[in-house]
Length: 202
Image 1: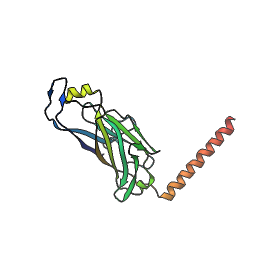
Image 2: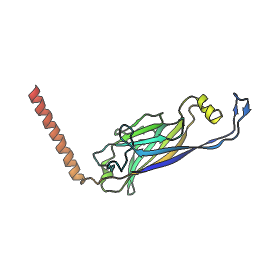
Image 3: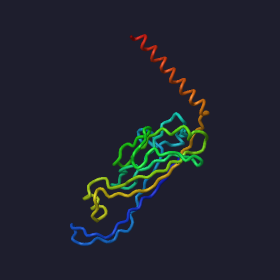
Image 4: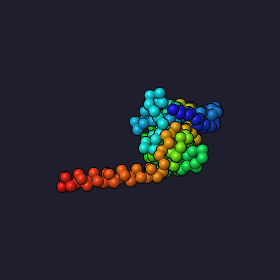
């Protein structure tokens, strides 16, 4: 399994804080850690030692982006790209907007989940799928609690953006022609079952 950690930096400068009636010192750089990992729909991390976590063309993909800093949450996923070394890929999330095969769940919480179905072209071989993205992080609660923690005035909408990247092992799919034929067969089979049920019940 692949588990990557990336750091988000937010620089603070000196600012007067009315509550203490004095200027706070320069706090330098506060580093926010997040971990990015493949999970199931219930946000449980998938572990290679427990199960085969290689992604197949039939599998939905769930990825969790987890803030590791107290009171800092993932406010938004701004970018989520799926690609390979030899394939440009596509944006499942672009500028905060997800495509029709993708959802982003629990924005504003410590762990945000992205769910998607990767396009078939990413399963033409066994090379890893590369996921690259950006997340917007910020304080979880009111500015008062944030002040208590960092001892300076900062508004609720202050956030920092950073990039993350991970890789996924995949299972090579059958040929594109076989995949299309299989999909047509399943569709026709489902239609026939539906007709049979309708004729029996009605």
